Length: 276
Image (cartoon, rainbow, N blue to C red):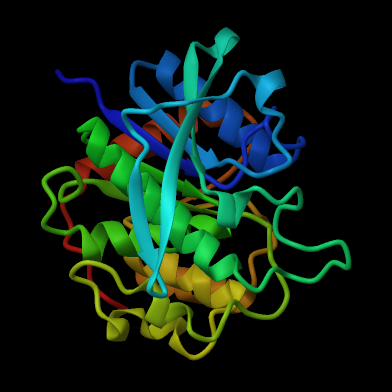
């Protein structure tokens, strides 16, 4: 029996970012899943607040060097890697001087949401996909965590639907309490078009790319959902229920076993994804 492969695409991971529910799960869940016999790969953005020397980041030359075009501008993709020795796992970092060298994560010193957070999310998601392609690594499960990954299920199920690396992958999306106020750039849907995807496929966020609509977009294109935040917005909760997709309610007790079993259940289903 072949070892299942799980790709983790995470907004933040401890110890590279501060401790919170998301960063801790993103740190310890991959380790636990690896210890339970599955193969893993883990990705996150290389925010400017990350101390590369302290954490031992170094560039992977063979994976870097691609230019991603967003809004008609070229943005070099730089891939870095670091190891968490105790966990025997590596973390890949998506880096770019335009998007990730600033020290702040999503808001400036005045607390204002960065205007280019939409492009940062697009760059991160596409950067992970291009890197996995270079690695020629075929994931069975893709687990996305954090709003910056909300476009990833759409790319896998739409733009990459005929890519042999991704065509059979099952996507799981975790919903956390990382809500932001307001909206991403109004042209987010137009900018996010890539490969075989067209703007009409992003109708969920075309007029209002808010946190709730991004979450619904991720749910729409995922195969299963994890509810980490116990206070999911009622509108989003209703959308999840209507989708009929498998849902795991996160609990700190034995959560690694619960997630591993959930992955197995999702892999055992061969239901065709249907647009809501």
